[in-house]
Structure formats: structure tokens, C-alpha cells
Image (cartoon, rainbow, N blue to C red; front, side, top):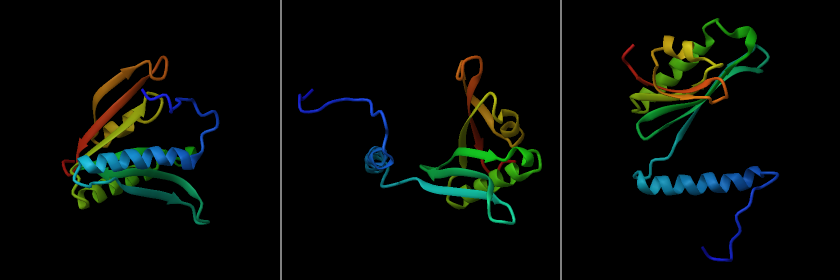
Length: 144
């Protein structure tokens, strides 16, 4: 390894500097994937005042919808908004020619919800978090 470089933990990460890594990885991946780049998806649930009370962040990429984050305000859970968001994300993925979906969830999050929505666990990582599990799930879209 050349002596001109240092490896260090950044005590106070700067968003713009972290973006350099993401951009570099994205460029490398695109060079290996016929130029395909993630096409982001942002779905919100908003109150009448415009405030965000729930949402989904994901991306379609390489033939897959990857759901990265889903959140709903506690008082709105169980009222169908999460299912609506997920359904809209899946429909948009199909429109973008992505017939499969992938997501991860922790044991204290929403595993039963995702299973009710047709997702199937393909990986279970015990003790992530300690005493719990991290699950990876997939779904073939359009097969409800």
C-alpha cells in the first residue's frame, strides 16, 4: 500500500464527503451494469397541513424494487396507509420494469406486516440486534 495515504475514522462525518463515496460506488456499479443507476422513489403520507406523517423511501435498480425505509406515525399505524404506500411502490416498480422487490426489517419492526403483504423471508440474521433478528424478504410483484 502506498505510504501517501492514511486510513482514518472520521469523528464528525460530513454529508458532502460521504456523498463522494456513494457517487464513486454508483459510478463503478454503473460501469458494470450497462449504465443502470438507482431510480429513487419517495412516497409520503401527509396531513391536511402538509406535514409528513409517514413515508417510504426506495429505489428501482437492476430489475428490483429495493424498499429502504418505511415509517408511519404511531397513531396512524394499522389504518392501511402502510399497505397503500407499499402497493404504490410496487405498482411503480412494475411500471419501471422491475418485477421483484427486496426489503429488510428488524424483529421489533414490521415483519408480520410485510408477510401479510406477500413478502417472503429468505434470510434471517440472529442477534441483529442482540436478542432479536434482522430479516431479508422478497416478493415477486404482480402475483398477489
